[in-house]
Each structure stands twice: as C-alpha cells, then as structure tokens.
Image (cartoon, rainbow, N blue to C red; front, top):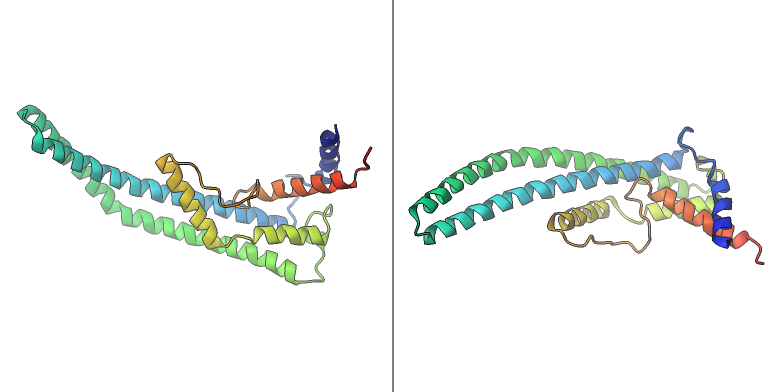
Length: 213
C-alpha cells in the first residue's frame, strides 16, 4: 500500500515531463548522451559482426582444407576443394570492403563521441556555475538534485562508454553473458537512463516525506 501511494505521488511530481513540451536545456544534454551512446553501440556491434564474419570464413576454409587432406573419397575431396574456392572468394570480397566499412564506422564513432563530449560539457558548466538555478531543468527538482543527476551522467567518460559498448557487442556476438560495469539499476548510456534516475529519486523523496502510520 505504501509503495503504491509513494509512486502515485511521485507520478504527480513527475507529470510535468511530457513528450509534447520542449525539453529543458539539461534534459536535452542527457537525451543526447543516450542517443549518442546508442549510436556507438550500433557502430561497435557492426564492427564486431564484420570482423567475426571474416574470422568465420577463415575458420571454414581451414576446416575444409584440413578435411580435404585426409579425405580418401575423390568426389568428396573435389566438393571440399570447390567449397574452399567459394569461401575464399567470399573472404576476399569481405576483406576488400572491410577497410572502407571500418573507416565509415570510425567517422560515426567520432561524431557520437563529439556529441557526448559536448553534452557533458553543458552538464559541467551547470555544476560549475553556482548562480545557475534548476530552471534549466524540470522545476519539480531542486538545484542540488539536478547537480546530483548531472554528476551521475558525468560518471563515465566517452571513452568508457565506447569500451563498454565494445565489450557488450563482443559478448552478444559470442553468446556470452552481457558485462555489467555499473552497480546501478540504470545507466546513462541508454536514452531512458536519466528518466529512470529521476523516477527513482522522486520516489525516494516522496517516500521519505510521507508520514509514517
């Protein structure tokens, strides 16, 4: 009952955030971090897949060659040789286009990194400018709460975001458990990360302010 009541009050305090209204300055910065981090995740995933495809082709060629060396059936040996030829042709095509693909993805990564740096710069300016009040954010929050939110969004550098995205992409490609470098149940490398942070903090605050029965 207490949990439901707390979230009802939190919802009231949070209701001023609507998708129809223009975002406040720091909201835009936080949104940009999430969008840029998502773009980085796509870039890293595409790169891991491209490199994995080439490795898979090389492994298949090597396996066919090894099998052909010990195969006594001439028909099967010829089929293996034909498979090697086809796979080698595919490999050459992928290796030829790989540098162009990686250069394009590097440009995308650099652009996303610059967007994160610019957004985090806005957050640092807010923290360092003492006279700047929380009007740049939702009026339901105090300046202290907005500073805490900005500090949470600054906890990871762009380079750390890229490294985490790479590890996650490699884990997904390998079918391994996804690494979770952060202890929090939310993080700012997702577009919804800051809204989850806000909801958690508002619920905590409302819960503390409610009179105990």
